[in-house]
Image 1 (cartoon, rainbow, N blue to C red):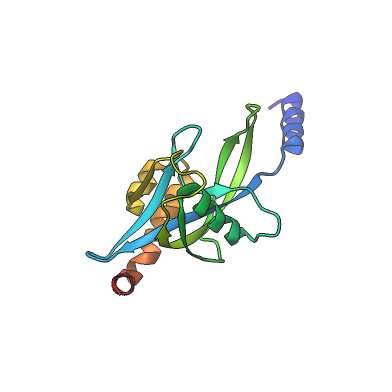
Image 2 (tube, helix red, strand yellow):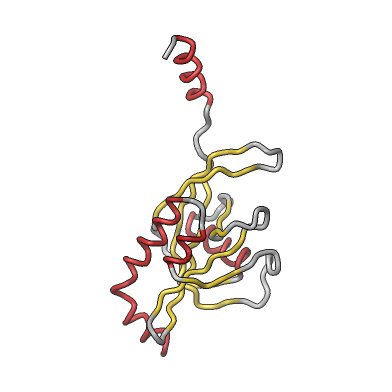
Amino acid sequence: MGFMDRVTGNLRLMLQRPPRQQYAALCYRIKKKPAQLEVLVATSRDTGRWVVPKGWPMTDKKAHQVAEREAFEEVGVKGKVEKEPLGFYHYRKTLDNGLKIPVRVQVHALEVDECLKSYPEKGSRTLEWVSCEEAAMRVNEPELKILFLQFAERMQPRLPQLAVKAAS
C-alpha cells in the first residue's frame, strides 16, 4: 500500500463518525399448548424488510423504556420489558437525504401481555408471530439473526413453567 493510500485510509477513519444509537424490543410470547416460544417481526415502512420495533433515544427515557415505547407505537404490544439488554446489532440506516449512516441497536426482551387493536402505526406494517428460527431467517442483519437464535436457547429451559403461567 502506497503512502497516499495510507493517508487516505487514515483520513477516512478520522472523519468517520461513531455509530448512532437506537433501542429495540424483541417482543415474545409463550403459546401454552404445546409450550412454544414465538417472537413478533414486522415489516419496515420504507423497504418492507423484516425488522423488530426500534427507535432513536428519547429525552427523559431510559433505553429499555424507549424499546417499550417503540413496541407500542410500531407493533401495538404492551408487556414487561427487561432493563438489561439482550445484546446489540448493527446496520446502515438510509436517511431521507440518501446518506447511509452506521447505527448500533441495543435490544431488550419484552414479554407481551397485550396486543392492542389500535396503535399509532397500525396498518403501516405487516406483523407476524413466528419461531426464533423463522425470525432469524427473515431478518437481514447477521447479528440480529444470532440474537434471535441465542434468545431461543436462553428461553428453552424456561418454556414449561412459562407455558403453565400463560395458561393460568
